[in-house]
Image 1 (cartoon, rainbow, N blue to C red):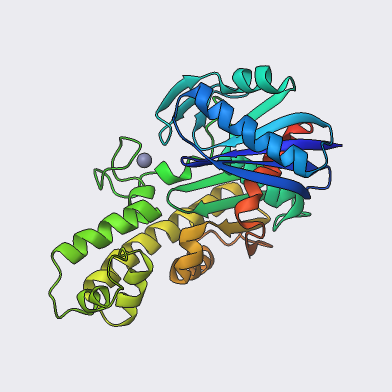
Image 2: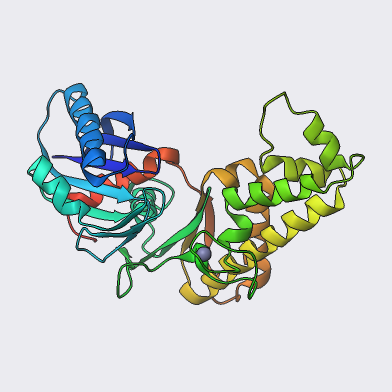
Length: 318
Ligand SMILES: [Zn+2]
């Protein structure tokens, strides 16, 4: 039995035909044009047709969507999708009408965590904490083999725990969120602020001047500059790394997971952050809570969400 997995981001939609073992049989990706719900449904339908054709037109029993945004529980309604400018869009119903199949819409991180649980770095573990640091920061919590959704479906909004009261503004409209210090977008913003006022003789300014013409300054430059002795780059990076590591350690203390899975592009490109999380969990989570804990890197890369969404559509949370 195969299902269709959809990964809906801010710029692309991907569709994949996934079998019951979590293997991708075929996939296709399409760029979003207009951001209206109907236009996005059209793009998804095109990507899905292409994936189905590549898979030999197998029948799919259901459709699972991992969407970047906040959902209204299990209603299929996307409450807020900042990248798409959506509020209260009945996306599940729109897709169900198009595909004539049951549709399940979940948060992209929940989908990714489910993929890692079933066929990735969380296999065989029933209590899992998954932390992703990409352009944003998020987590998903799996307890006794089930996703923790919370009363209104937004449990795991890890990027928006406060780490500095009244601190840097965050994309969510609040201030001092973890994501405002550690997310890829915000690390880039902090880097640009440093560069704007950097002494031309500083390691950061020298490294930036060596970038190829037109190449943007990206967060790994912070790590390079800190390594070259740049005090201000080190300060920004240390503040971000400590906030992240402390937050993850506290999550471990509260949740007592059997495994912690770390993923996302920012952690891949800034190994120092990932190392700091590992050290922080050892140093700052309570000893009883981390007893038996293993820490692993996410295994499925960009495919975790699409595989997880497809598997979630094929039946139950459990
Ligand atoms: Zn926030």
